[in-house]
Image 1 (cartoon, helix red, strand yellow):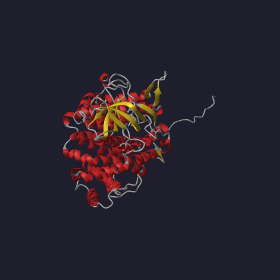
Image 2 (cartoon, helix red, strand yellow):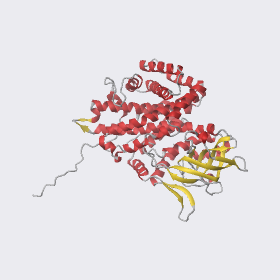
Image 3 (tube, rainbow, N blue to C red):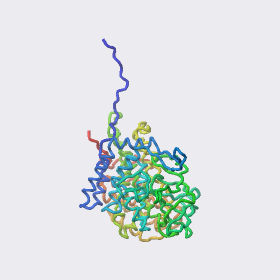
Image 4 (tube, helix red, strand yellow):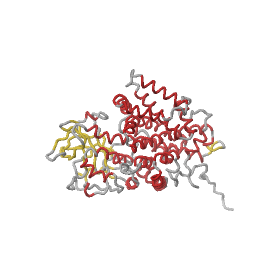
Length: 550
């Protein structure tokens, strides 16, 4: 009789991988939002393209790309083997596959097609769930377009390249490219968010609109890009410039990469310190002295992407938590069926849906393009950017805990999401910058508050907790005592009331009920998972759970 070999490695009670599913179709908040804002004649095409992107995002192949791009971060190459200065950043092939797929899917093309911002925002939310780092060049390339329109001659050259669906990683002159990426370099060591303290100089050259730059930038995002929008002090004051990596004659511009930042998260994406040596050639964008106003067109668009990217991180974290707990058993029942875990999951799911719903509403306002839409965005974008990005980190941490020790292990993917979570709160102006921008809009642009009040007013009378929160907000707005010290509190209330109004109008009743009770009615604790037990939490959890075909 053969000896019995004991088995110690039988795997049981582990969930299957969350792979092989449609990331778009599995998210009702997203699919319903697209149907809400995309007109009937274009909805079919939008659903088809987003479905293809969702299936790619849920594939094992794309998930491997995301893992590889982070496991093998970019490397700075200042010189070639012969000693020539090249200032290039080398990326793993997975990075290029991710970026190429995104460009081909139209994630830098929103400005010239029907419902372009809603469609792009939905796609951005889907695809960056695979890997968030490569969303940075996608965002800046998309956002550079409105800034460049301040200089029509430049826009005529660069806009077709930036909105192209062709990805070309090689550095060549613009005239020899069919697709290009754009980056941005504003902040300096001594100034940070106070860009008016910038010391980089711009000296006019003989040709109109051409300048030579001298100075440094403390953060240059996506330094492998084809061109950058930068700020520098011209004779007429702080001015915006377009700085190409390759000059029209094919020679490299003087763009000296000093080092890459060693960041907490966003590891796949390169962020650099860069110096301009007095021979760095650039073209003026807009008038001298109008640099901040010009580049703010780019900043406003990237702030919306901060909201969207945070919503994407939140959705992926919640999807992982829901999937794990739907398959894992403890104490005789699936985790998701246990009342306390269900409470946590429902709380996370509602937070995620509120973020997604708000991001799509902002995108729809961009598509609307009316004076009221622009006024609404002026107040709603910084408020949303402040609040949604702030909620991302605690949500991801709680979702990680739903997986227990498995979530703390790198292979689960949750640690990467947790490292990524704080980024969007810092990028494009940290929390205080957003809160002060909200105050600026309230003080200087009465139409912004009118548009906001009109938006939330559409939901009045539908929920008593929302109505009470609106009255409380109006009271806060009427009290200007110590307004700057209260700016964060006020900005939070603006965002919460707006989210509540949108959910009351558009979400299923059980979702809106949870949000209004917990976020507006005060019927919850400070941590996730402290919702009133009388709410329909099971329906909320089931709505948000991603379904994978067996």
